[in-house]
Amino acid sequence: MATALFLLVTGAVALTVTNLGTVLGLVGATGSTAVTYILPGAIYYRLHPHSHPLRYIAALQFVVGCCITPIALTFIFV
View 1 (cartoon, rainbow, N blue to C red):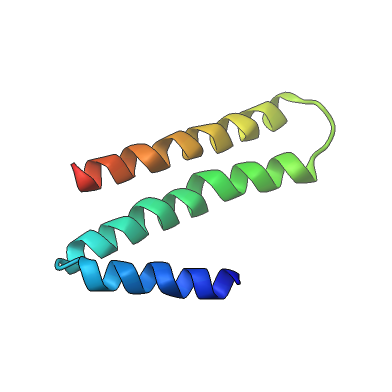
View 2: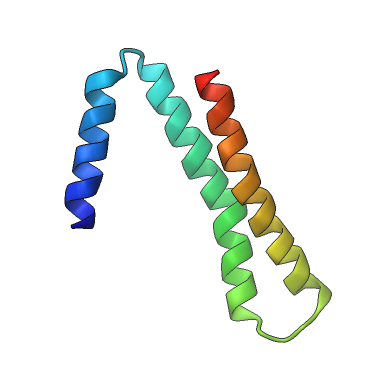
């Protein structure tokens, strides 16, 4: 089901977008933010269950990444 949804969404994007730069901007805005902010923060938070300052910094990094992604996507489309 997830694969079919992924194919439908990517197919719709491919048919509607006329500029490849927009597609690359989408990939960069979502992929790089996920790799540099969201995933490291989430993984560190899950792997270190004991309460200490670095765990809270990792949670903050995750939240910041979740805020950066929609902001970056907004700048692409506006």
